[in-house]
Length: 395
Ligand code: PMP
Image (tube, rainbow, N blue to C red; front, side, top):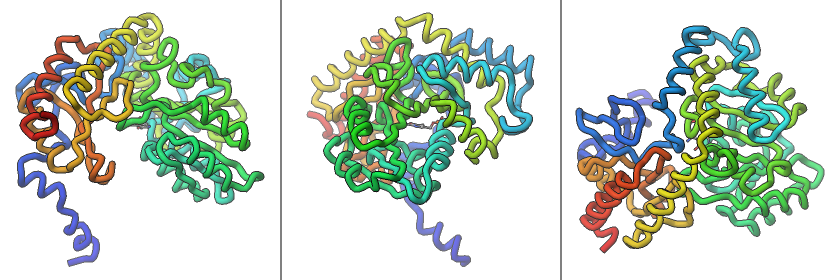
């Protein structure tokens, strides 16, 4: 057998889960991404979506995407650097820069590409990238591609961050990158303290607002706005694949930085720009987020309701206070079984197992949308209670 095939044949974890009938990935959905989705001809409650504002099927968002497709076609067939810049790309950049409170903004084709392209381009061999140990994978890959010195601090632990800052050469670039809301466990970064330490040690700060936009801040502007630290944060990153109900991402920062990135970021230059439909959908979603603050209010109402219910049931939910609720199971196979049984009960949730987290930290990631009704939340929690009791997770 060739060495490559031999190596890959040792990777049998998915096969074992499939053989046990509890493989939890790539489960096809045959409807729009809404609070209820169609799977195998059955309606299932969706509590595994990142569409926090619930806008992926909003008529105005769909209409905007259709109109842009009719006007500009289906694809850009080129990089923003060359033939792939549209007037609506420039308009959205200007609008997003103003929305989050920065001088300029650039669109990337995915949120993953933003982190990869920005972190790897702004830092180099002599510099330091300082990351929270629970930062998103795309940030970690960006650091790797930069060849910079990697310093990691304990999750949201500011003493640990300071210890890492003290290790840096004072004359070299230091970039602290953190998720605003952590993607798996739903807790919020201590941004006031991060920006204070950054000033003290002359470091720059980048915040990933993937899960903060829509949810936190005035008009859903994110965690930087919520904490009043927008001016102290050098780079604000966002993705369109969550509250913005689309696909793509952005970096908002000073013009000097965007000028450098536009001409040097390979993940920006050497890939096609986002489609007209995706661009127009973000613009329409932003209109709705600003015009309908009641969506954000309702999301927080049902979030607080669900948090109360899970705590009362005796579930272990870590330090979350957001629509991302981790339900700790602490065993890979039990997590697969629970995910499987919950789908049988009509509830879709996501399993988070090794290697994404340590084996003792496995969890079910339960996430809320502004379009969920309280009745849907109650139904899902009743199903979770039943399945968790079956597996002795709660008593
Ligand atoms: N950052 C964070 C914190 C994320 O959770 C994600 C997606 N899960 C990304 C970046 C990547 O975003 P996208 O889906 O747009 O590639």
